[in-house]
Image 1 (cartoon, rainbow, N blue to C red):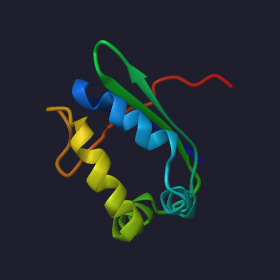
Image 2 (image 1 turned 180 degrees about the vertical axis):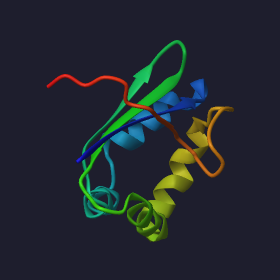
Image 3 (image 1 turned 60 degrees about the vertical axis):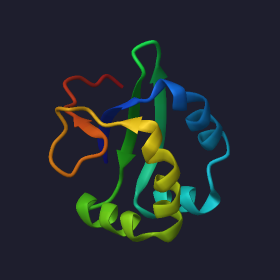
Image 4 (image 1 turned 90 degrees about the vertical axis):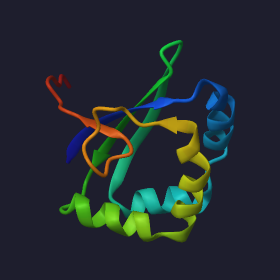
Length: 109
């Protein structure tokens, strides 16, 4: 299992919409997350900085392949069509990233 953290900005005027969407996440999107070997997925909001922090645990063997399958899923594509305009990717993100992945520097269980 691999723990992963990621962050992205959120447009202040879209916070209410983003919360509303995630309060009633679509079953197909939730199913695709599970089918992509992701468990314990959480998104946190920090205001007034307007930053989202995501945490997930990846239980698969090929993260890139699982993310490619997720990106091919029609429900997920439609979900991202609604959620992506709420987000503001970080200027320092890697090429091709929406969310910016973070390095784990400490863990205590």
